[in-house]
Length: 114
Length: 304
Image (cartoon, rainbow over all chains, first blue to last red; front, side):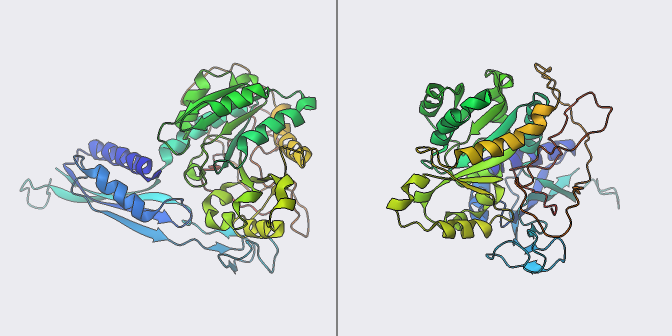
């Protein structure tokens, strides 16, 4: 249940950014969750609903975009199927996780400024 | 303000950030890592399920490393009790308990705080025994040189497939309780196969804390990671200066030109690389933190 501590970190960052820009309110948060980010999107959403009350995010919906994990060969770029042995069959080199598959990113904050 | 007509209305602005939510933890982890590296301490993050044998492995490590004259140390995290720390003390490893309360994982800040009253600088190999949990600890970089995941043979062959995030974060998997294999239905090749499906560079050592099986290979692995640290000038008691960030830009292409086959490196790209820093920097952080978040995620997958 580390989703709560992640939401806490998210909130701190949003509040900091809002202060910096003298924002009156936050209207939307966009977050990207990679399949291998170690975060359950539903739990994250739930944790956010719990936390946002009474904060500058009180009225801001959170949109969570899921990013599927995919693997490829760093040498020939061929796709290495998820669930298979993570090695390029042709080149024999270890597969590489494509960008975003393990990331947990705060993409954007929509805020109301004076 | 609305600049079109000057009506004084507020404005909606989209602020694009694209930053890691764990950026704060990663900063704290970088800080820890700098300290470990400049003090020549090999720090390892030991993770695994409750009961996988993390503490037992460390007890056995103390026995197996007796001839090495390494000074070992550990902080050991649990929700409650300091039982593990006391077990480790008894085994000859100076230890300190971190009780996390409800927290299911360690983060870099908790580790940092625990360092303040523990003589970690006087250790050569420093274990951070994480909370027993195959989920949450995986995404928090603590500043370790490598992640070691302890998986016992009693846990089921498909554990790696069920917890891919944890096993992908592992630099090494210690397959423990191997002395029990004759009494179980476990099929070890299946465990290895499962690991190869979640780890691009699976590195596994089969051990038994009880019989000592595999402990020599584990000690050799530690030795290999320790070598670059041990060779570097050690800055004991380096001032605990905060906020130093070394802009350490390495292109992460490793230069070893082994032609031909991808060779099974004895170590899977451990991050205490033994690359030479040429000249100038008077031993300031001889190596180690290359800014690639370790553990916490982003593995750089350079081809070997």
